[in-house]
Image (tube, rainbow, N blue to C red; front, side, top):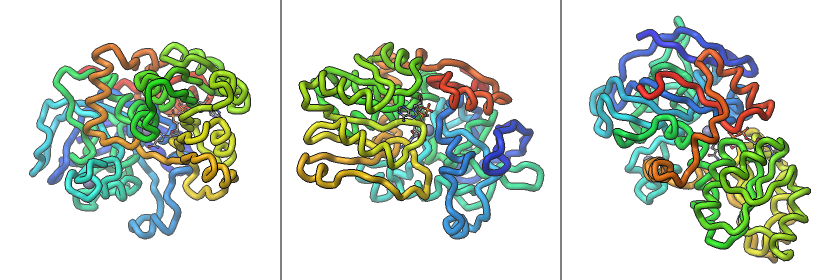
Amino acid sequence: MRTRAAICHEEGTPWVTEEIEIDEPHAHEVQVQVAYAGLCHSDEHLRLGAMTAPPEVLAMLGLTSMFPAIGGHEGSGVVTAVGPEVAGVAVGDRVAVAFIPSCGTCYWCASGRQHLCDLGMYTLAGPMISDGTWRHHLGDVNLGRMTQLGTFSESMVVNEASLVKLAPDASLKAAALISCGISTGFGSVVDRAKARPGEVVVVVGCGGVGSGALQGARLAGARAIVAVDTVPFKVDQAKRIGATHGAASMEEALPLVAEITQGRMADVVVLTPGTLTGDLIAPALSLGSKDSRVVCTAVAPITQQEVQLNLFELAMYNKSLLGTVFGSASPRAQVPRLLALYQSGQLEIDELITKEYTLDQVQQGYDDMHAGRNVRGVVKLAGEA
Ligand SMILES: NC(=O)c1ccc[n+]([C@@H]2O[C@H](COP(=O)([O-])OP(=O)(O)OC[C@H]3O[C@@H](n4cnc5c(N)ncnc54)[C@H](O)[C@@H]3O)[C@@H](O)[C@H]2O)c1
Ligand SMILES: [Zn+2]
Ligand SMILES: [Zn+2]
């Protein structure tokens, strides 16, 4: 069928909306009419080359480029068709996407860590997980899709492993933001750092992911939550969803955290700026107390190796430097859990959506993100269809 999707033709060129062709779903595949797609920073990492697989990895996948590719990996929608052997969802079901697929049977899924599912190895590959062929086309050219999804599209075909089934009354708008940014930030604090009541949490970078981290800290019972962002508007917004203090940089946060903790420093520091670079690690560790957990949530350029930090500090102060994908929780457990918190009024999502865009405005939305104008932009497709 014909549909419309926002595509990046080659690295560094803007998102443009094109008419494309999608095939019927094959075995284990599902066609979804997308309702909402969030503008997470990671799609820009794909477009601008930071998350683009190096040539040797592409060669292993039989590819020369990840482009052209459909963007979007935050999203929600309604199932409109299912291929053979689909067991988990049916036509009419509301679903959220998951940028790490969950097979349910590999070692990682079987041990309760679906965010580490072995199918994740396909997440940056272009063709379908099910049989290695392509379902999305622009004329004669096959289209890759951001993390096996491509939610910047009116309709998409995905593997059922990439979907989370939702309750029939679930808010599709909230589910879109929860499907990546909110879950990742929330889990960074709650599931990765395992924040406890009474602790002090610092969140560095208060965009969509940071907004999940701030609220994870609030719901975990943190006694002080310090929002750090270079953009004053983001710090103001952070205070509306739970931050108790704000700072414009980690350097500025240092004396503030020392004052709040009588010099003991923060229990948890979460790094959620737009891009992670090596120079951010040492100041983040400096904000942490003895036995602190510093969580690297933001994506660094794929080939980045350099980081300078005080290794002595790790051992003698018993500090942990942790990474996380999807906030270290299983998508099929975390997304419904956070939706329930939203529905009971304990998790703020609507407040985070600064602006809604049409499918033709994806690049405009990302330009606004880079300019610091949005906490989160959302592309409205079919809406609450
Ligand atoms: N680990 C994962 O599984 C995962 C999942 C989703 C997103 N991410 C990554 O998380 C990061 C955040 O994503 P997002 O969508 O919230 O981005 P965003 O652009 O919406 O927000 C980033 C925020 O960081 C602020 N910022 C930038 N540099 C800063 C600095 N040095 N100090 C303080 N604040 C700074 C910006 O002003 C902005 O408010 C990105 O790198 C994204 O790719 C990781
Ligand atoms: Zn994301
Ligand atoms: Zn698995």
